[in-house]
Amino acid sequence: MRVLLVGGGGREHALALGLVADPSVDVLVAAPGNPGIAAVAEVREVNATDPAAVAALAVEVAADLVVIGPEAPLVAGVADAVRAKGVAAFGPSAEAARLEGSKTFAKDVMTAAGVPTARAYTCTDAESVGRALDELGAPYVVKNDGLAAGKGVVVTDDRAAAERHAAECGRVVIEEYLAGPEVSLFVVTDGEAAVPLLPAQDFKRAGDGDTGPNTGGMGAYAPLPWAPPGLVDEVMRDVVHPTLAELRRRGTPFAGLLYVGLAITAAGPRVIEFNARFGDPETQVVLALLETPLAGLLHAAATGTLAAHPPLRWRDGAAVTVVVAAEGYPAAPRTGDVITGADRAGVIQAGTRRGVDGTLRSAGGRVLCGTATGPDLAAAREAAYEVVRGIELAGSHHRSDIAAAAVDGRIDLPA
Ligand code: AMP
Ligand code: GLY
Image: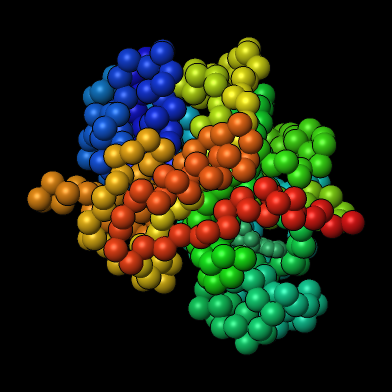
């Protein structure tokens, strides 16, 4: 089959590697694409958030399947425009993508579906913000009510900082703090049938020990040795199926990748957020372990035939990815620096570009990821850091504790 992959970052590089490894894929076109993607796909330039432009490209390249990576094109209606041309698209409609695009919409769906999540208030002025902060207490969780690429959330004990963030955002969701380790569960769905991938954990804070500002994600590992038995079944039953049913009931079924971000609290799993696409960098580890051909799976979801798809097969062992970020990330990443060592196995490129002199250059905040698998988590972690040690990028930083607590058995589930 001929596949068009939309979006040009680290998640898309991981998706591209998965797609070309599927023997049913004859041609992979990526639009846009970084140099890592260009090594395995034909790269075309396109404005990924222009639905008409992406749909026209899908027709031009005779795509049998369009896979949409990032949230912005989904929210802009790219999947709708592609489907309107009669081409199968992996990714939800603009309406269904509001599950990620609007925190208020997501809360509304969860309430209607009886999905366990944090209590929350949507606020638009200082007075209602003050009331919500009083009622819910510290730590304060203040979220921008729009797409914010993972950076619109402030979690703080500092009341003044919480009020400041709320004032900067305008419309915010203020919610109850959920205490417990976080899990990212990806679910492939055609709107009705739903298949969970392996649970993973992401590291959102910039610094070791979960210190520093929130980021798009600094590393990930899968599977989760500490996850309670039955976790995935419980989340499918209590979260995923009710949410999909509620969206069908509203006439806007969700087909694509439902990303469930959870906290495992003393009261059980609680939804922190939904995303409408594969997570980054969790995709890098989850796909490293998936043995089932990726394009066939996504095509089944895109064509409403997922119920007939064979059960997923997984490699034994574990995977770890460590993000190498640019100097100044997340506040003000410096770009344009030369990168060396990116050609080794396990390097997944995110914010990179080819300079006029042909050298590889940094072009974003999260620049590359070192990804590796191993027979167990400790071995995968060691191998991922070995990949990172081979990468040179002036001023870059990475966390040194990705997957460390899980390897050491230091992740406690709240009693
Ligand atoms: P979000 O953009 O909703 O994924 O939030 C980013 C990060 O903020 C999450 O991964 C959590 O680490 C943290 N966070 C968000 N909501 C909550 C909450 N209700 N309780 C505790 N931490 C939260
Ligand atoms: N890893 C977090 C995200 O993709 O939103």
